[in-house]
Image (cartoon, rainbow, N blue to C red):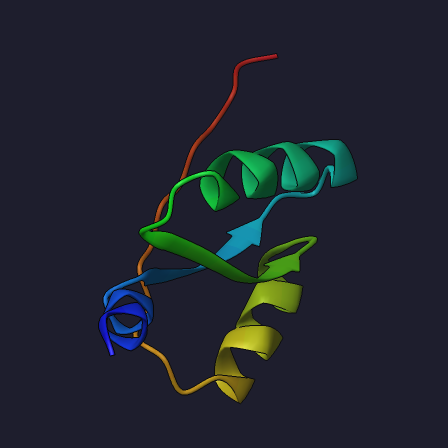
Length: 68
């Protein structure tokens, strides 16, 4: 019962980045937090929007930019 409650309180995340390396790095980092569940990854905005439209979850938006 408690395990089910913990799963329901997890934040579901779609990781979006054009770099496969960064998607994997961010996914691994987020998966180390028991309050976060990475439900999918996307390689860009269009891919993310397509995947979001197929899911019926709330959307939590996080944007990070790196100078370079």
